[in-house]
Length: 206
Image (cartoon, rainbow, N blue to C red; front, side):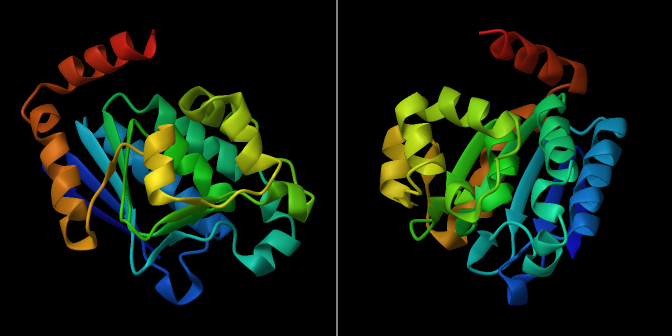
């Protein structure tokens, strides 16, 4: 359900459960984290994270959410691993992003999305707290008031508004999404892994 493909220094990770809106199980979260560990160990210069079908991810699998996955530590472990990757990370959002899956995109360096994508994180309505790092990263991108609109007011944000807010960085047609992500990764892929990591560390100090 997680497809991993290595092309030289590029690691392509794909959530492949379209029949369930790419909802994530605990095993899938652990698989994603393990794939990132392998990419880092191999000296990857770039990681692209995407999904299959028309939804990037609906968040937690409903059955596992009822059993406790919605508040499980796997989400925070995964987003922390993504944020710590010493390479360029790009979320190529092929559709709607919801719930706990937000953390993956927020932890990436760059977020691209298709025009049809929508963004929502209904923790208030569902009675859950978001994962600890998600509100911090969200507020850094869009500001505290807009973060509260998403997390507390249950706002559903369309792609053009998400772009205007700074939640995503570009809107691209579906057929162009992955090729655009790979084009953005090209300079990193041409550089030494240590050089990529050094520049990322300098930017992250700001």
